[in-house]
Image (cartoon, rainbow over all chains, first blue to last red; front, side, top):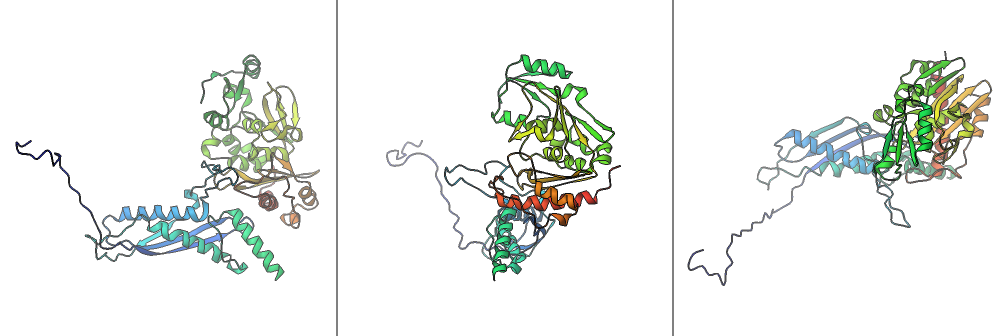
Amino acid sequence: MPHNYPLEVLEPGLEEQAYYDPINFTYPGGAHVAEVEIDPETGIVSLVNYTAVDDVGTIINPMIVEGQLHGGIVQGIGQALFENCVYDDASGQLLSGSFMDYCMPRADNLPRMMIATHSTPCTHTPMGVKGCGEVGTIGSPAAVANAVVDALAHLGVNHVDMPATANRVWRVMKSASLLQATE
Amino acid sequence: MKTFDYHKPNSVSEAVALMSNEKDSRPIAGGMSLLPTMKQRLAAPEVLIDLSGIVALKGIEAGAGAITVGAMTRHVDVANSPAVANSIPALAQLAGGIGDPAVRNRGTIGGSLANNDPAADYPAAVLALGATVMTNRQEIPAEQFFRGMFETALAPGELITAVRFPLPIAAGYAKMPNAASRFALVGVFVAKFATGVRVAVTGAGPAVFRVPVLESALSASFQSAAVNGHGVDPAGLNSDIHAESAFRAHLIVVMAKRAVAAALAAPAAA
């Protein structure tokens, strides 16, 4: 320590703070198309085709981008069709506490996906990149849920709660058919 | 998992002697249900008696009018057996759809029946085919074997040795899997005999059961359409986070229809 260091007013050490304060967020965007088939007897929803085109700005490693989109899309499909967190109303006990009860999407639940990118470089990030991690997750629940509703539109259905489990879809079809029968 | 002692006898009599000598002992077949239960400490037997060393309990024997499957025969062996495929193809198909390949390579018919899980596949076949469960003490008709949820007619110290299936004219099995566990949400086995049609349902109730209204409809006409217009009462059926009882009641009729279609599509028994 230097002989004249002002120890009484300044503690020794090295401190530096820096902030990254982006002038704007990045705005990735895309379009997702899902095709589903519903078994009218069991209510099982099968995802038969899935196409996504996303704009994630400048792409540096296309393989990583495709993997991110793939994973994100499947997470969203899980929300739309399978994953259900259920608590007991009376006790608050989690009823879907293991993978025997909490349904994760698995490979055989999924079609081969068509994934493409359409890059427009971001104007306010150093390399023109945009966020990529959540793009798939945002597009897919809406695309799949809308496909389910569209498949049931002829029955007058305009909403199905997520996840669209077989039981729920059967219940919705049954109520809609009863309603149509009474009209 | 708690510690336990382990024995691997070579004969049924040796196994039965061990079971009566050792307190709190449990026989273990493939362990596909018992081991996970022990890992979760829902069961903590002090002694396990491993039946996999008893050669006499393994194998499939095709006889006149019946096929006999040894208690320690694995699902994969039933699924791939030419004798089963020739006599009761629906039974081979059922075994090939139990769990996943890892389960089918370990799990056994005797273990599945003794456990009597309400959503297990085999009980549906055993009850619909009117099979006989053979033990070291007696022969138990299927109707008397399944008593309730995880409950059977087996007494302490009694081991299943084999299951004898009479050969049907036609048979089929259809299952709606639970999306998460892939156990049967509802599984229906139909079997046509000269004396009539038997329909057994798994996954929908506390234990496997028959459906008289579908049996009489299908005995009159063994066609998928014969079950149209017949309903099953949801009262008493399982209701859980995967399926309400009314949905299960509906699925029983749908799966019965599909099981009949499968039976009619299968080649006639040799």
